[in-house]
Amino acid sequence: MPQPNAPSSASSSDSGEATRSRRDGRKRKQNGKTDGGKEAGATPTKKQKAGGSKDVARVKRSGAERRPHSLSKAARDPRDDPEREVALQQRRTSKADEDGKMVDGSVDSAIDQSRSPSPVIDFDGLSRPSRGTRERLEETPSEAAVRLTKMCGAVRTLLECMGEDPDREGLLDTPARYAKAMLFFTKGYQQNIADIVNAAIFHEGHNEMVIVKDIEVFSLCEHHLVPFTGKMHIGYIPSNSVVGISKLPRIADMFARRLQIQERLTKEVANAIMETLKPQGVAVVMESSHLCMVMRGVEKTSSSTLTSCVLGCFEKKSKTRNEFFSLVGLKR
Image (cartoon, rainbow, N blue to C red; front, side, top):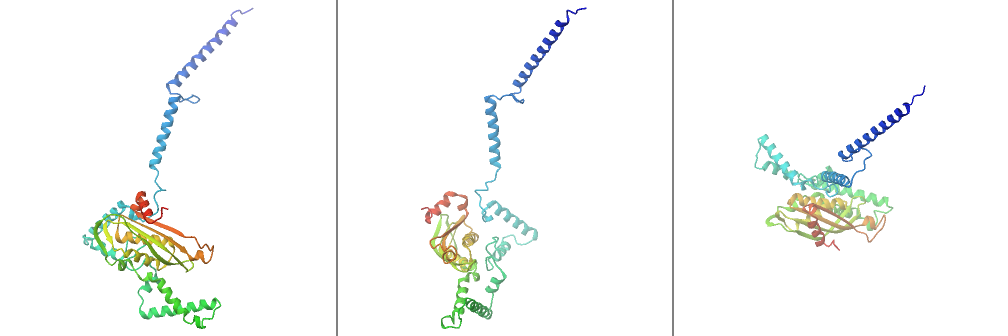
């Protein structure tokens, strides 16, 4: 028996499903609008793009603010940090109070007279002190004679190993002459900062730049024991106290009269002045020619080596640093 109503019921069910799918599609679109287009597959508007870029910029700025300025802060003397210095001074004062010692600073000053807080300077005798240099500083005349005789024998052995005759007329006194010359070249091992400065620090209330330039420097390269010579420029900005002008070249000579490399020599002079005078800042520049590069090795006769060390305000303020470089002739 035929069923005339079957096709109409099927078509009505299809139309109902289509109606429901359209209704669901409208709801999804409405939800997408209310959510600001955040659902997957939704295309962001121009306003949303602008807001997103602002968020990214905000994150980048906050990251930059948290990032340490590692490229602008060189590895310098830690005493350049005033907050650290104040904290250390407070710690020393509290320790003296706990131990029941004098609080007037005499204990600390006594310690400072024997040992400096800087790893470079040691006021009881030497920088980079070792057993051999301290023995030389404290030796008696008889011990000095034994040292000289030992050095003469070593030089005679060197002459023999080079193929020379140490007994010929021109070389008879060479071992003694060379030994005495080496002791003179390295006499800085027997000097210290306290004796050189000799309390020549004067409270003048001066706080402008002081520069001593073109200080002639002669030293021995510790790698080949041949000379390097040049000129050193020293500048500092006082904290109301100035040092005798002649003391700056004397400090340079003290460190130069040792087995050295130019990089360390420049740094030691700067740290010594900073430690002794406690100024606002110190700047040292050295330009020299190394005979180990001229007479041997690459044999570059016209080359020169330039090194610098800036501490305190010279390191922190580019304007001050550039003024110093300009005054000593480095801004060509």
